Length: 449
Ligand code: DAH
Image (cartoon, rainbow, N blue to C red; front, side, top):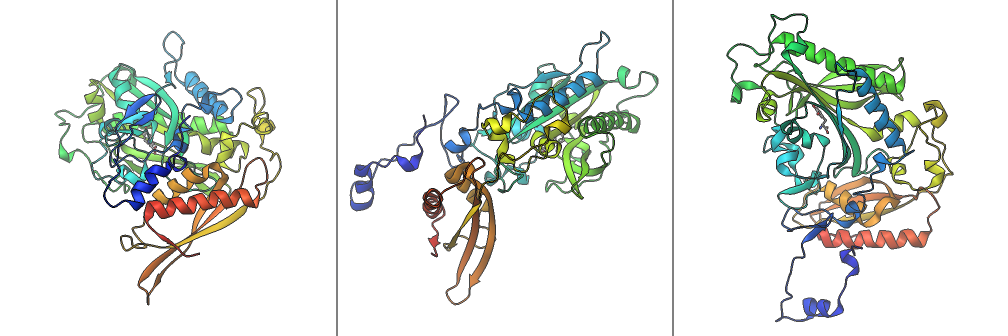
């Protein structure tokens, strides 16, 4: 069992740290141990035990779990949609890769620029400067292509530091897919057509309208591809994905495609569905950048790819109101799901309703922070770490500048709710007190009350 730092208080050490002016405590940095391997800590290390406790749970592979049911529906759809000449499924399924990846895999291999917003330390969980928990399953794309797979689905848990509410949790699940299509398949009926423009140049700066800030780039094609090849591949991609949302939500589902930007695809799209009177993004997709295929040794194909989150689909399909429920081990929850039932028979029924309880943390910021650069994502990560899944929501309810004292103040409301029982006031007080202590320690703030 891994003990949390807060509980290991050695009184002797405390004494020497706070009362002795001569003896400096030796700061021996224990390595970080994740999945039995040791990682040297450095200034990027921000992975804490609470998040680690969600690793290896494999809920997406667990029988009768709603995420597992969705996973199987997606795999089924691909098995049915693409078959080899001999009638067996074309797509391979890879669902057991470790979520520990290098920054190279998560970012560089996908042409994500060095200054891209997604690389921020506050947005992902880092073991150190070289290793992180994957922020998307796309992290495995290049390696799997290199290994020789050409049509595959990668399924697994992904980790992001994000806001806290009923639809966000630091761990969630994705299916990421790649399909490469050779010229003879793509143009089976038009042997005179080509995938590539004559004399195209790859790896050139000019290849793409590359918007490093993630803004929507022009929905054009990569210069190396012929328009015919892109349009055919795009058509296949969109057809199979619309087929997938119809397979999941029924033929009547209202959907639309919107242009998007991903560094690893061009053109790129998002598919949105109409749900609860609003458009909800369900997946990102596009034509794989040819540099990625080239790096993996593929020169005669065009490829498409997409990534889809499982939690959002399951929440919509089964009316599950809170993302934390997926981590429930309560049989009252799990017994509601079974592959043999229809979707209509699996609409979520609350086991019972438990009370919410909220408490605020408000504090003065030290001079090192302004109201704008206070790292809210790190604050959320810390609250999640200290409060675990008792924390249902965190929102900023006040930010103000005290002009006389020239001090900045922030106030967050933390809403606590247990999914399976009522919380006592005392219990919440203890957790809230720990959060306050940790916030003070981590950000050097002064609590206001
Ligand atoms: N990795 C993206 C995400 O997590 C989703 C995505 C977009 C995956 C386009 C892909 C892709 O494979 O081609 O938001």
